[in-house]
Image 1: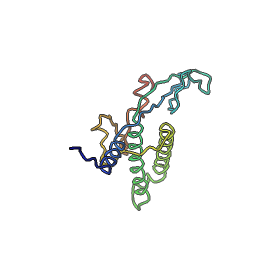
Image 2 (image 1 turned 180 degrees about the vertical axis):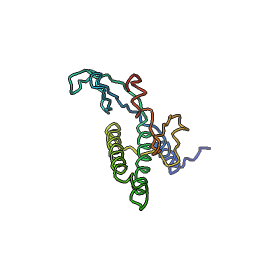
Image 3 (image 1 turned 120 degrees about the vertical axis):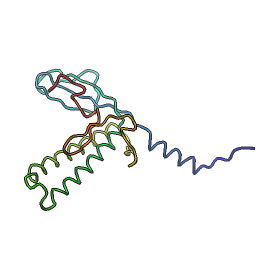
Length: 166
């Protein structure tokens, strides 16, 4: 007797597998030895790069899970949004209001830029992991930025890739 295959269950199973499967990508950290600046790029260039000061930059490629990076970035944005809403509340750290709000807005723009670059890397629609996804459980070492509590993955910590840099 042949086994009956339920196509709806099989389709749902494939959707769930796709939601939990990683998307491989790379971030390239760049360091100018002359200017001591560090930045990242989503573009890999085998022939190297020249910084605006004319110096050949040091490069370090970091393999990432694009979906994990996107998920962590979205969680950071949610946290920043909550903090921005608190700065609008009456009586919340009055001296934090001006400089703190500007800093939070800058952090939010940085997160948005990072997500744009992740989308470019993915070259297709990339959805974050579900809300119950735990990066630590998946072996991703997360560093928390105090006092805000933002999360940084190893791919977003240039000091890990250029340890001699200050």
